[in-house]
Image (cartoon, rainbow, N blue to C red; front, top):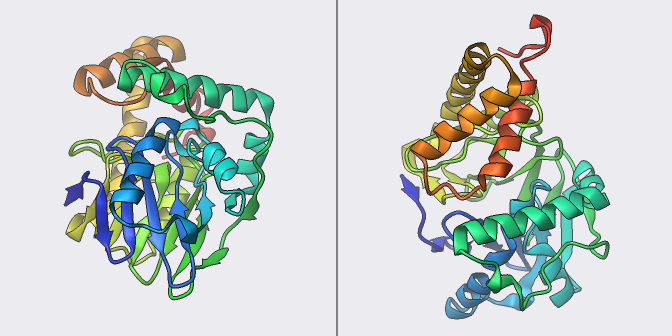
Length: 303
């Protein structure tokens, strides 16, 4: 079952943010962690939610960035400046991205584009010190890293493919997986695939995650999944990845090149999903990156 409503998921596990931009707060006996970091404009909602639900801000000692795309790092700068004691975590590759001035410029630009698309304007950001600059530092996470919260801990898996810096989090005490976009995005009843970095790595990452016992799958977009669908979500993501590969190859054959194929796929995407949160210009870049993976020799095509 797919659930988009914010609030308590399980004892000590909360969904914060909005339908399209999810942040999870996991409480332990000693400290709490924010898993994923959403879009900047959800900050007012997050603070209202924390206050109304009686969550202790003082226990939040950790923030995990699951990958360094603009829509997954948005609350970090503001919170790190507000709560200097908080430790921010990302993969080593993620920190490389977040130290790159060009990447920071893109993060800030894309944040404004999506805020205007979803909210109609960017006024909500005007009173917030939300932008990424060069003042946020943190610690590295890698395969088998662990963050101890007391009676619970968070295990880390390296899961590149969506991006080169992607990691996933798993909480064994809840059998809860936080794959970010390393698995399919659960829009409506679909499994939306975005493997902009490498389909080969994406599929290998899904194989890695398939070995976990999952009863709760917490996605970064459009909520969380429980029950039987959570158990089979990674298998369904693997199937959807294969279907996306077929779609990309077909578009290349029909359109004759990456640019017209990407434009056509974006048009079809929004005809089917008119309220999808990503700005068309950004999605065009994602489709272009995916298509380029299939313009090389057959030896480089991943099946």
